[in-house]
Amino acid sequence: MKPEKKYNVREMALHILRAVDTKRVFSDKLLESTLSKSHLDKRDKDFLTMLVKGTLRRRGTIDWILDRYVQGGVEGLPAWARNALRLGVFQIYYMDRVPPSAATNESVSLVRKYCGRALGGLANAVLRKFAAEKGDVRYPERSADPVEAISVEHSHPRWIVERWISRFGEEETSALCAANNDVSHVDLRANSLKTTPSRTAALLERQGLEVTRGRFNPQIVRVRGEISIVKMDGFGRGLFTVQDESESLVSLLLAPHPGERALDLCAAPGGKATHIYELMKGTGIVVAADISPGRVASMAGAIDRMGCEGVTPVVADGREFGARLPFHKVLVDAPCSGMGVLGKKADARWRKTPDSFSFLSDLQFSLLMGAADHVAPGGAMVYSVCTTEPEETDDVVRKFIEQRADFGVEDAAGLLPRDVVEPNGSMRTYPHKHGIDGAFAVRFIRK
View (spheres, one colour):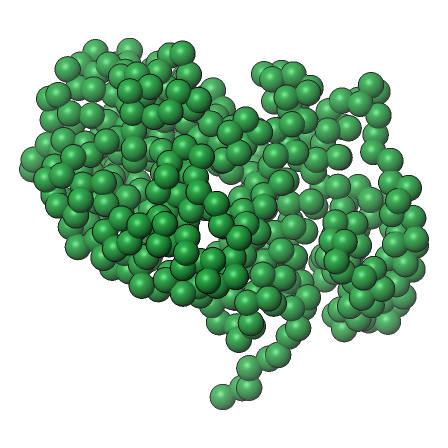
């Protein structure tokens, strides 16, 4: 048996960044796996989380900077070298508490280790020169090219900036992009079957965390900083789970009652299914379906951790789900572009392409149509996505209503705070307006 390799925190971050860059793995999954297997203390786990997520989130700006120091551009360098340089620039430019000399020396050592002395010399020259000149960085002028200016300053792909400027204008697009980079907290939902938000907040404060309460849902406890939660006291006992406040509003909109039958058709990783069961006071039945066997297995673990015995995980395609009895409440939390969570999912903005919306909207409509037949007369169905793009929100709802005259939209204002409800009755949230993830949801009633 080979001995376990020992890496320092920056080297662990480099391995994750390179894997995301070259193998297209998902950074959050790889980071979670690395943290769970490591023997790092809390401080180093939080530092690793910040390095990985921060470097990925700011990659657009970092690459723009590096292209001015690397002949031929940073993309022309080997993956080890370019990601070590990105890591160095992130620390020098965005992390005031890290001495530039430490960031430079560590990154140069990593380049030498994985790419040799020649590229190590290049890295040393680039990072030392940038550290001396970082105060002179000037972004492109907004008046000359607003798309380029916002894209570079706020580290978003040009096509996303163009799309949002056409809908929101330059100032609001800049604010939205800035909010996507200002992710300074993690939201947790206190498990009402086991504890209260007040007791959860006190438990976290005893662990040295800075805690506030949710703005729109009192069940949410917000922890300051980008930190690793899974090893916190209370998580393993199911006293709380990670869930953005925007996601928690979806289950409130579904408004399940004790003793009802509820169906969550795209349930993994299980956050909303367990929340539904909590809102049902631990009574009734929740069927949590997902098409992926692996995700269902993982969800089963989360359900068990939260103590939600009445939630049954099943492997099923939501478009062809079969059930003998109708459900009082049905949730379709459909796969989507994730354009509302570009802040939380650090590498997401670099994966997406402008041609994915048509496929996703067709899938979302198919899931909604498949779910409709399982709603009991007089029952409710909620359609939700973690995006605010029109192709995946209003267009899907409009198409569904045209096809299913037996369903009507119910105003969300009766169930949610007015600040998150639009005039047409839909729920819609934005990071720059509400301080939570971007999300959309609409509640249908079967006539």
